[in-house]
Image (cartoon, rainbow, N blue to C red; front, top):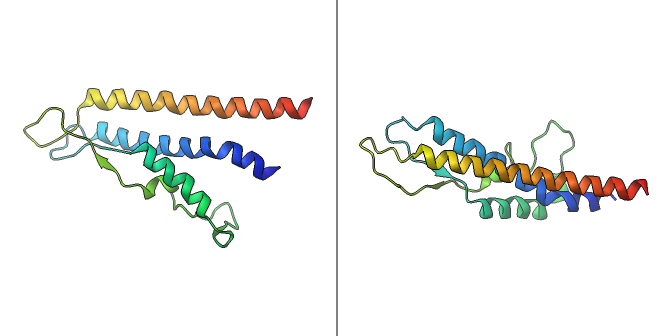
Length: 136
C-alpha cells in the first residue's frame, strides 16, 4: 500500500522540489539585480524534473536512508541540484554587464509560485480522494 501511495504522489513531490529550487534561483536573480556582471540564471524545469524522477527510478536499496537525518541519494537539495542552471538570454543590454531584467524575473517568480500552488492543490486532491476511499 505504501508503495502505491508513493507512486501516486512522487511525481507531484518531485515537481514541488524542482519548483522550490527554481524559486530560490529566481529570488537570487532579483536580489542580484544591481550586482555588476551578474548573469540571470534559470532552471530547465523539464530536465530537472526528469532528473528528479530518473534519480528515484535508478535508486538502489543500497542507497536507502537508514535515518531521516541522512542525506538522500540526490544530495542535500535533492535531484534538482543535479541539473545545471541555464543562463537567461539578455533582453536589454546594460552598462555593467548585468543581464537581470527585474520585470521578467518577477513575472517568472509569480508564474512559478502559481504552478507551485497548483502542484499543492493536485496533491491535496489526491489525498482527499484516498481519504474518501478509505472512509467508504
